[in-house]
Image (cartoon, rainbow, N blue to C red; front, side):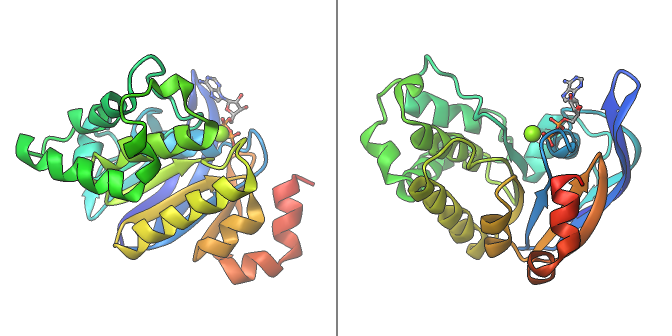
Amino acid sequence: MTLEVTNLSCGYDGQMIIHDVSLSVPDGGFATILGSNNAGKSTLINCISGIVPASGGSIVFDGVDITHMAPHRRVGLGVVQVPEGRQLFAGMTVMDNILMGAVGVQRAKAQSSEADIDRVLEIFPRLRDRRQQVAGSLSGGEQQMLAMARGLMSRPRLLMLDEPSLGLAPLIVESIFQTMSVLNDEGVSILLVEQNLTLSLQYAATGFVLDRGEVAVEGSSEALQASDETRRAYLGI
Ligand SMILES: Nc1ncnc2c1ncn2[C@@H]1O[C@H](COP(=O)(O)OP(=O)(O)O)[C@@H](O)[C@H]1O
Ligand SMILES: [Mg+2]
C-alpha cells in the first residue's frame, strides 16, 4: 500500500473540517476524491502533503509514518502535490517555474535534473516551445500543464492533483486526464481531487466521496458510477 490514511482529522484554528477520514491508495493505484464545493477535499490533501497539520489519526506512506513530518520531507519521499489554482510564479518563465520543482528534491543530483527536464518537456511538448515565455501569459491549459511539470520535477511516487480540470476547455481537460493516465501507467500512484465526477470515475480505479469532511461513499469506480448514493452524497442532498 502506498498511502494509508487512517481516522484522519484536521482543520483550521480549532475548527475541524476533516472528521475521521480513512482512505488508501495502493502502489501504482489511481484513486479519486470527489465531492461538492467546500466538502473538504483541498483540506484533506493539504493535510496529506503537510500544509494543514493533522489533529488526529495517521498518514502512512510506504510504511513510513508521515503524519507530522515537514512538508518538504514528504516531497523528498515522493509525496507531491499539484495545488488547486496552479499557484505558478506568474512573473517567471516557464523554464524557471519547472526548475522551481527541483529545488526541494534532495534525492536529485544536479546532473540528473537535466534528464528530469528533458523527460518533463517530452510529456508536455507545448511547454518546450514556450520555455522562455512568462508563466502568467500562458493559457489556462498550459498553466495546468506547467503546474504538473513542476510537480514532476520532484519525482513523485504519489502525485496528488487538486482540481486540475477547473476552468479548462473539454479538449484540454481530456489531455490532462490522459497525461495522468500515462504517468500512472509508468508507476506513479495518483490521488486526484475532482468535481468532474464522470471523467474522474472513468480514469480512476477507486473513489472516495467526501461530504462535509467525511467519507460518505467509497468503492470501485464502476460501483460509484452506478450508485444513486454517490450522486446524492456528491450533490450534498
Ligand atoms: N485556510 C483556511 N482557513 C479557514 N478555513 C478554511 C481554509 N481553507 C478552507 N477552509 C474551510 O474549510 C472548508 C472546506 O474547504 P476546502 O477544503 O477548500 O473544500 P473543497 O476543496 O472541497 O472545496 C470550507 O468551509 C472552507 O471555508
Ligand atoms: Mg478545493
